[in-house]
Amino acid sequence: MSKADSNRQGSYKSNTINTQESRHRRHEVTIELRKSKKEDQLFKRRNINEDEVVSPLKENTGQSPIQMTVEEIVRAMRSEDKEQQFIGMQSARKMLSRERHPPIDIMIGHGIVPICINFLQDTSNSMLQFEAAWALTNIASGTSEQTRCVIDHDAVPHFVALLQSKSINLAEQAVWALGNIAGDGALARDIVINHNVIPGILQLITMDTPLSFLRNIVWLMSNLCRNKNPSPPFGQIQILLPMLSQLLCTNDMQVLADACWALSYVTDDENYKIQAVVETGAVPRLVTMLASEEPSIIVPALRTVGNIVTGTDSQTDHVIEAGGLPKLAALLRHNKSNIVKEAAWTVSNITAGNQKQIQAVLDANLFNCIRHVLERGDFKSQKEAAWAVTNTTTSGSPEQIIDLLEKYSLLQPFTGLLNTKDARTVKVVLAGLSNIFALAERVGNLESICLIFEEIGGLDKLEALQEHENEDVYKKAFALIDAYFSNGDDDPESEFAPQEVDGKLQFSSNQNKPEGGYTF
Image (cartoon, rainbow, N blue to C red; front, top):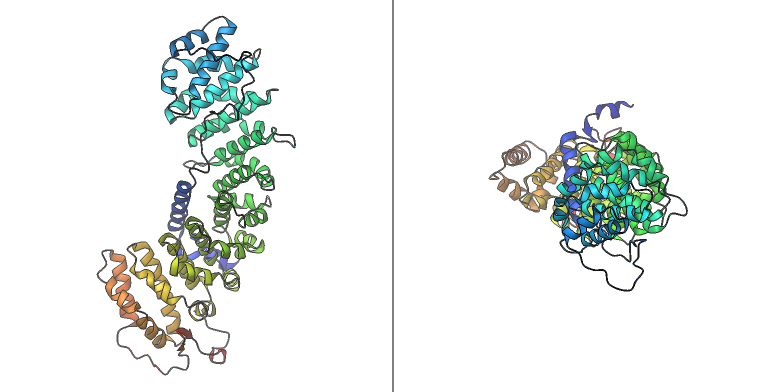
């Protein structure tokens, strides 16, 4: 490890941003993104449409089945007569497959769950097994209490055993049920994982796996990777990573989306887990997917790429080398604000890296897009764009910081965020401004930059912040005014003084730069 890397241990890539703060930011972004995708990816699903999941037990007559009450259904299921058992079981499944308000609690109250689990084990009657599995899948699609009832009656090992069934319909139904159980939370997920489900589902993926079946398998894989406190056992999840990486090469939108979400959950964690994903070779394909026209693909791919660049410099380099920066530039102008926000957050993590990475961002002209976000984006996007600027002023070289001001004219839109009511964002901007003023003072440009800052209304905003309700905000604002805008002995005729040309800050030529360049 280099000395520079060693000095940055314990930080979130930037020496002004500690790990706790950064992980909190990552967590906030994840929560917001999960809210935005609830309709795109459901963690639990109920069988409703028989055209999509067909029972192998089609009635032989064209007549409608006789409607049965819950009591009659349960009585038939408890019968010693095999035909009555089947009629009762199928009627129960159909009742639980109602699109609106299925009577799950009523069925549970009548003791249907243990009966269904007994039927799951009847290997002499695969049709009965299938109907029982379907009914239990729908029960497990309900509330946590309803799912817990299925778990507590020891359904999980029986469903895992059914993954090896010769009946593809039965195996697929078992996958669906396990997906609902694993989607209920960390505890339920680990119960499924601990019953050796992962080898069972991996062997189901072949060149001949039907698409509907593959979709359910990948959805289950995604739920096995999801949830924290605790995170899933990584020794098990790591077994899934090569297959998830391979699935990124499929053409089906649903498979791609769920594979990306699975990888996003894995990478939303420690660096060694990010590295495990990087080592599967998934990064180039994830970067390619950022150019998709489908938001359902862009969002999880971007989420994963964003998580990867929160890791080490080497992990971030993989994204840059795969061509990630031009893709991010396009996404910063996307018509969906949540995608713009996520792209800006991703850029902010790259600019929290080393100066080579910051230069790559500058060379890709991403700060033109960042300025556009600062000027016209929604507030959540602006907040992440502000982090991108402040991180650059923290980790960048003097020349790179000067580029922000001179080439990209970021001072005015960046300063404009001092008017926001969000104290955390104001503190981010104040930190960036403090870095800019400190640099200007060191290279002899303080007088001119203070003049321009005052002309764009920045000083008025700082003075107003001295009345801010947040103690940190008004203290930082006061400190900036006291340090740079009180009377001093700065020489306005400094040879380093920049000139304002067409509203841009023009710094002195390189011939005046100290030998070896500007240094902090």
